[in-house]
Each structure stands twice: as C-alpha cells, then as structure tokens.
Length: 125
Image (cartoon, rainbow, N blue to C red; front, top):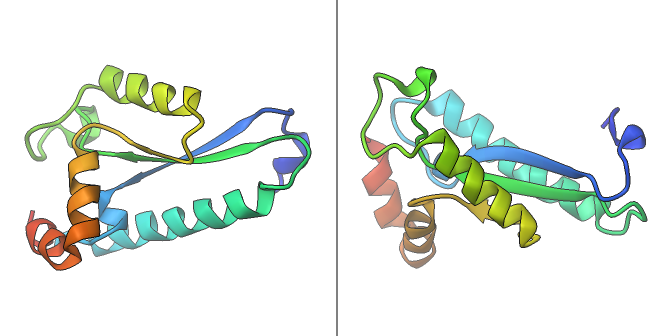
C-alpha cells in the first residue's frame, strides 16, 4: 500500500498464486493458506483500484509447478521458467485480471465443475 502513491500511470501489480489457492493439499497447509490469502487480497486490491485515474492494473498469475532450484526435488510435469514468463506476459498483454499459466487452466475448469473432485486430486499430491 505504501508504494501505490509512487506508481506511474499504467503500472501493473502482479501477484503469483497457484491452484493451491483454490484447494489445499495435506503437505503444505501454510503455503496453501498464504496463496489463498494472496488471491483474496489481489481481488480486493483490484476492486479498490478499479476507479483510480492512473489505471493501475492488478493481476493474479496462477502458476503450476515451475522448474526452478526451489522445486528441484518436487513433482513432475513442471514447466520452464521461460514458458511461465511467456504465458504471464501474454496474459498481461491481453489485460486479463487472472492469468492461468500452463495446465492450471484444466484444474481451474475442473474446480468450477466439481470442487470436491479437484480437492481429492490435490489433497495428497
């Protein structure tokens, strides 16, 4: 909030979340809770700045597991940092308030159709 007065017209705030913001998994309760909180904060901040004359955009980028040093020993099916960046920038170019990167689109669609099924799939992943 302290940086808002310093932001230039047309600036963007991008917050990174994951599908775990929608439905948590057993092994990461704190991580899931913070991603859910960040998702809610991002939406509320977008609402707050909607009428701001500077046109500051607030975007949520929902990423899958990205192949970085932090995720070296975790999971499979990771996307490259380059792919994540390309898809995020494409979403920003399209002025999307929420950018679903990689396979997240399928999980978000499943979550809309059957939140219970999505929860079962992620619970022990």
